[in-house]
Length: 325
Image (cartoon, rainbow, N blue to C red; front, side, top):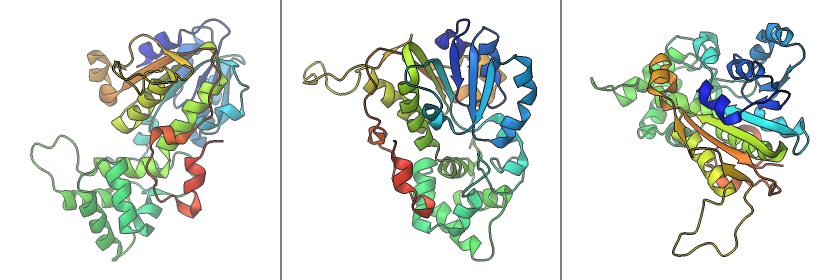
């Protein structure tokens, strides 16, 4: 949704825009070509390495920071940025690399770590309790057969570790079954749930929304592209809360109005065009939500706003991941 994102951000010469998910640099290049200065964030070290040529191409107007986009507030002062774009989820670059383990389309190690560090999908599959696997696959993967999948994984790992994407895909397909009219592979939802969990994608998104709110100038623009309902629900809830669109009704309005830190930019939600969806199948589920920052002070960041599930983060990280400083 490149054109829609650029239109929502409306970059002007010299403005500072943050590309929260730099990836292959598509958004950044379009913004730079319109005169903006861009700071790209990415937690994948491969992305930072591969962007060296692009850094030289734009004569100091592009900088990259190797960090999650949720940390943008640690690198910029309050009210110092003109725009932020967040494109949520895994990038095509990562999916296409078999050795990153994001997809079962090509067999590879069961990894899925965007930052290439920390707990991997193999660690989760081979060591987590069945009850935890059920919650991860059922809640984050939205898999209605999560119990069946988790118990199949438990039986299989008793014979030896599950180490590859193809191995896990076979286990899930056997457990769930595959009908002749099924449009997606039976393992798709399980892989989604594991990837979101391993990378704490929903927590990262929530923290990034609060961080963007803090560093945007009055009149600054925030554009967020999501690809599935879990992500979109978080962004929708954030904008509803921050634009005064949540709670109350015309029959029983809220007693005390909260300060509105954003106003809606254009339509509340924009979907990818049919032309783009045909050109890029991944864009079929893409949704763009955007807002313009007001001059109201940012309230305290409270992750409870998003109602995220309490999942079994390893090494006692649950409280840390749920909390925003």
